[in-house]
Length: 201
Image: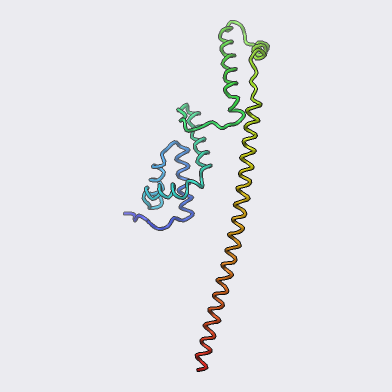
């Protein structure tokens, strides 16, 4: 019977936990199944693995989790499975224009069905598209750019603040080490002077 470990987690074990959980997310499995697999591999309980993931590891892998969910969604889309609501579309230019493109494709297909006796030529497509109303997304793009610039500026300020805090912590750490060195030297000096004083008595 395998002994259940309760010692501290190592960096390698954290990496194994993250790799297995991300694989299960990509494959559409549950996190509980991932915790059970990791528990078997590391001789730990699935509850301990779940606690470790939720308390210490998950925050470090948020972007990887998002990517794994997107990969899972792509896999389901390729196999024709249902894509869950939690998988959100990226807010990219392609996705903003996707409904318009789909509408155009639908209209073309509909027109082709109506005129199935006639062959669909490039001239007919151009004629149809020239009558299609133009969609002006410039204001939406401008707002997105403005929002991203503001977000970037905020992140730059946060990075500067963190750099300053890091610098202060490093200076405090150096000062503390210096104080500890002086205290140790003083302790050695004090001990040696007491020894000399006792030997002279």
